[in-house]
Length: 320
Image 1 (cartoon, rainbow, N blue to C red):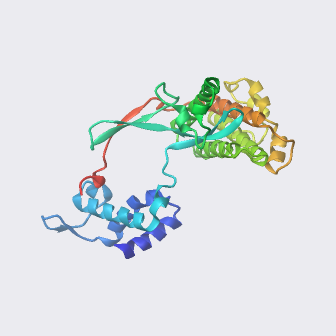
Image 2: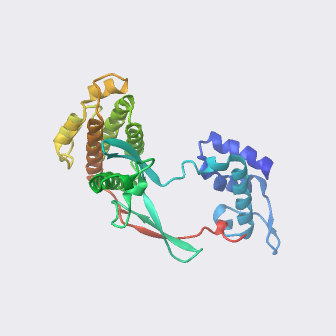
Image 3: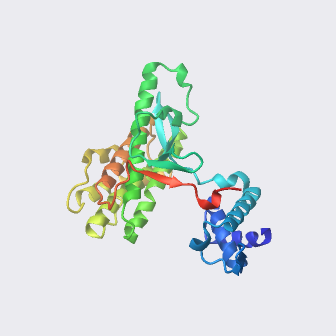
C-alpha cells in the first residue's frame, strides 16, 4: 500500500486537500485505483462505489492502514487545521490575551457507540470562559474584581464570536457570490484577534485592516442577499446608509469607533497615529457587534444555534 499511497497523497496535495482530510480520501482512491476484486467468502466481485463498501470489514482494514501510513509519515502535522476552536482576543487589566473559543461541544450517549454534537450561539452558564484564555495571567493572583471583569469581557467576546460562527453556517449555500463574501469573514476576525493578542503597536495597526474587511464583507453579504448586488466601496458608512430595504440592526455610531477606511489603509501599511490597547480593543468590540448584528439580519433557511446532533461512530473506525 505504501507505494500507491505515496502517489495518491501527491495527487491530493496538488488538489489542495487538507492534510487532516486526506486519510479517508486516500483510502477511497486506493480502492478506486488499485483494487479490482474483493472476496468476502462468497466469491470475487468488484468493490463497487463508496456507499457499497463503507460498512465492510475489508474497507475498515484499508482505512486503518491508510490512516497509520499518514500518522507515520506526518505525525503531529495531521492534527493541524482540525480544531473546532476560533481565535478571539480578550482584555485582562488592559493587557490583550488570545482566547480559543470552542464552536461546538460533545456530550456522551452510548459508550463507544455514539455521542451528541452540540452547537452554541452563546456561552452557556456551565462553561468557564477563563479556561479558554491562552498564556493568560495567574488568575488566582488577581483581585476578585479583576477576575470578574475579565470573565465578563471574555464571555461577551466568545458569545458574539459563537453567534457569528453559527450565522455563517446558517447562510444559504446556493448563491455563489454570497458564498465568496461569507468565506472571508471569519478568517479576517481571527487574524485581527491574533494581531491584537500580540500586544505590539505594529500588530495593532495590522489588526485594523482585518477588522475593516470583516465589517465590509458582512455588510456586502446583506446587500447582496437583499438586492443581488452591493456597492464596490470600502466606506462602511456608505454601505450602511445605502443598505437596501432597511438599515442593518446596529447603531450607526458603532462605525465611528473604527477609523474611516482611508485611515485603515494607512494603518495597513504601517502609517497613521499610534493606537493604544484600549482603542484597539474598543474597535475589536465594535467589529464583533457590527458583524454579528449584520449577519443576524440575513435570511437563513434553517437555525442551528442550539442544535444537537446524535452521531454514531463511523463504521470504518469500529473494531480491530
